[in-house]
Image 1: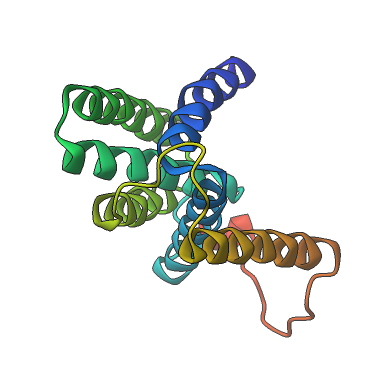
Image 2: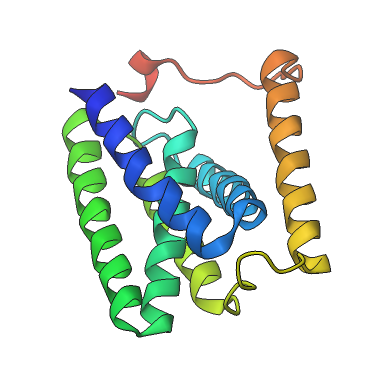
Length: 167
């Protein structure tokens, strides 16, 4: 069941975000909202199981919500409403399985703020702007840094609580 939901979610969100924001902005949004969601969630506390990508996926959903709301056209409102339905599904499912809904919420809010504040992206086929190129490079570097940290994690002298210590 989970694989089907993830696959359907990716098919709904990925093309919508890439179509409205472009590939470079999508990478930027994914990386930045994922990092923000996980950092804030880590400071708030271990309230659920966190794998890492769900906060970033919610950031993409939030960006579509913010952009669609600001756009105000029929297409924008339809995109916003479709993504709000996914938001509800993710939070309910997250609550049922004990996932980190703090990361989901922070990803959603940070993505919505970015989606609402950004100017409309350039038309398809137009030359990328320096800002778009910078965001793509930053997102790509953040992705590479994330991969490097997974492959070679930094040493830590901090004691991480076990599941038994938390609950």
